Length: 309
Ligand code: RIB
Ligand code: CA
Image (cartoon, rainbow, N blue to C red; front, side, top):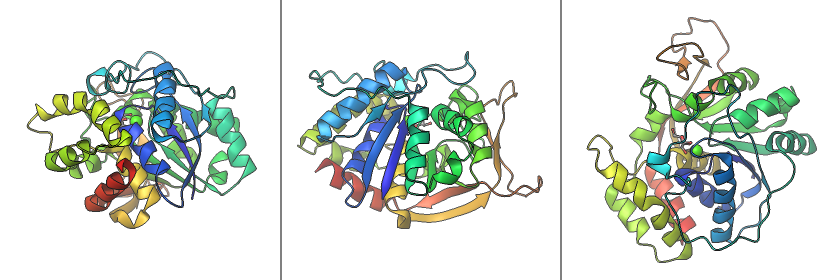
């Protein structure tokens, strides 16, 4: 399984990357970075930190520092900290360097070098992926599968446009371009994230793992957990990007999904960034997303145990 990861490496992205790095039979062949949870300069450093912690060598290609249309993005420091990794201070100087090639160009080149081989897992705003679609109109056809964490499927969002999920909200134009360009994408939405948390007891057990990866998991999540645990409506430890990675690495964990046509609201004064799902087929458009609504959280927990060992 040959994987490309596009990420706005925040706390949950880091876990998704760690999960892929420790999955037998999967190789992470490139990581591209994008502004989202934090500015891309922090995201770049965070990805290098994850590679240091995991002792993995993967080329990192720096990507877009702002969405396609400026003026809407704001970092999500409440959840991910100013640095994007929960204020993680234990960062020795890294010897790793970023690649010189920009992310979108790297995505296009890699897909052209190995058409039909790569699974692209997009964990942040889709700016780089949209740029790749514009650089090479055949890019979507050269990607074996696109899996993305993003969007809402019942207008239950997590941003100031309350019907919009953060990744789509940051760059709605990019999301619209990508959903239009790919014949089919696998979508892991915010509502599906809310339905499949770890219990706080499961979180506590993982955070007690006394390994470098386990200590990194604890140190980078404790701020988020302190923030989330205060809200009674938060059902447990949320796993947005890790769920998208888990169903990529182990598709058998998907318990329920359905094909629909989806597009993105770009104009709405209160809804810009909402992913609009045509459940009734009223638009008579071919479906373009496989919406995952059920998955085996116990299987995801096993992947965490594997990655933190
Ligand atoms: O809405 C959750 C998504 O936005 C996750 O990918 C998280 O990392 C942030 O990018
Ligand atoms: Ca992310």
